[in-house]
Length: 310
Image (cartoon, rainbow, N blue to C red; front, side, top):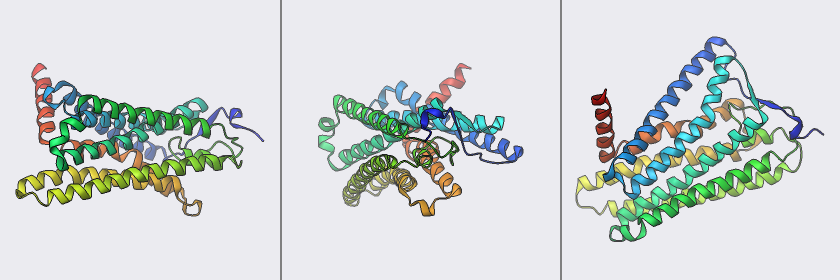
């Protein structure tokens, strides 16, 4: 039986067979990348430069933008390179690195979305305790815990996945290195250990999702008691986009990793991976971050200052 060390490279899924379609995919991926880079880059710069935005909500938003940038830069550039140069190759080391960083940033994103929900819960349901529960030290500790747990999760999954004997070729049915696709290359029963780890991670993700939903139930109960229609609308406009992003991200991610093999197909796998890996980094700045009036004003001021300098 050949093991994973005998594989020097993997073959990623070709998004199209015809060269014209490959160029079209390249242009589409380039547009998605630029949109994600611009939206998240503006948020990071605006929050970092705007002293009035140095609050817990915007601090976690900056961290979320960093994780979005990391996840999009891990998967899309290689897919663009392959489409442009009509190749499918990715080195063994490159595949392991891609899987590690993708798992790292995706795990960090889920942790940060959960923390941001807690921030919204405290600010709306327990406003008098906001300064105590979300002081600068507490925020730093929560962000550090999110990144550290994401790092350990990614390290565990990457080490476990690439320790398996891969004896079913080297062709992956995905445009980036993803754990379920690599597991398909192994006939060893050892891969059940990784499936168990995935199930544990999925359960933790589901717990985060339940916590978020429960928090929003409490938030909506408080919001509905707000006598001012404008105040209720402001709270809903902040919370609903966040809940939409979380629902899309968690549901597609869990389904992609735990769906039965009987309903697996290349088109379904590709669609699910796009929904949880490519769409959130592009949509987060639009439907969650840039709906905030303070942030929009800071971004507008930043862009105006850049144009005036030139």
